[in-house]
Image (cartoon, rainbow, N blue to C red; front, side, top):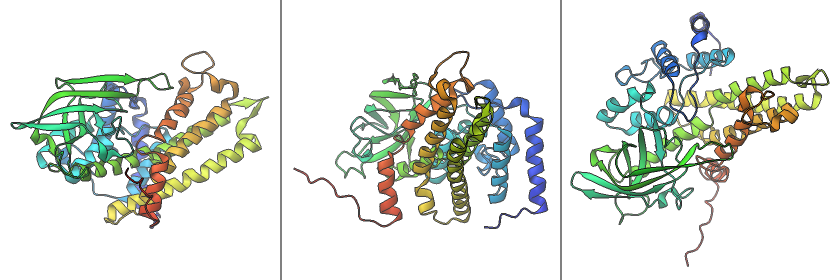
Length: 397
């Protein structure tokens, strides 16, 4: 990969910098698990209009429609990170469902759902895990029985992020109960306002209810809402999981967090001495920096592979595992740097960054489990990436 910038690319960098400087008073990050506010919706629309969000998504589906370009994508990432500017929405709808629909959805589904999802007008949640089907997702029992041209869906899901705020859900259900467990699943889109759906929040150690239980009782959904064909849900689900793991291990978000950590250590002092000047703390910071850079360059590998149509191989397999663990360790160093202030939470006159470091430290621990546990990720890396033997299965009694 040649990363040397041509005069054209330098001009593009100036263009991005000018945009960020001109619109810095409009920066509006997404509010996490909450629905996006008006300012965030306006910022997202501005980014799409200028090609800094949804850059390569075709215009007919609401994107900017640019041709893939490794260097321009890298320049956008670098300049937004340097400016501390939010990159627009990165949520389950935009980061997971949209690329899935582009890959395997019907033309009708793409035209109906991609544009409003990109703009933040439609919020999605993901109905995958169940109380008895987490790591072994193919064991899911939520069933869809035929009733004329519709399905009647009954069952439950758990750990469903943003279910309380979502308009829609992309959900795995069992439509062929007699088929082998991987073959009897369908991937269905339907409204969270459909009668028969109950959402129960699950409060975590952050004090918030980022996750939810969702119960379905004879929820009527048209069979036309199936994505990728009936009984092909396992194939479609894995396409989505690929994008989910990339979202959870986004190197650009990790790099932005690392820069925030540097600023924290420049401002926090002990006996009048900046923490970044402390040899022990600086050594820990540099160790994290090396890992942040390795993930950054691994991201360039993934970008190259996606634009050349080649398999990313091992580079793709390590993203979720390494990214989630690294994010948690960055937050851990921030907590240590805050000293006694690091144990504060919720509110108070001495709280730094509105408690974001404390919340990240607790929430990111859950992300090491969510989206495929670290142990499952290591099995995937060893079996699919390194060609090691599969883990033995328990003998049936």
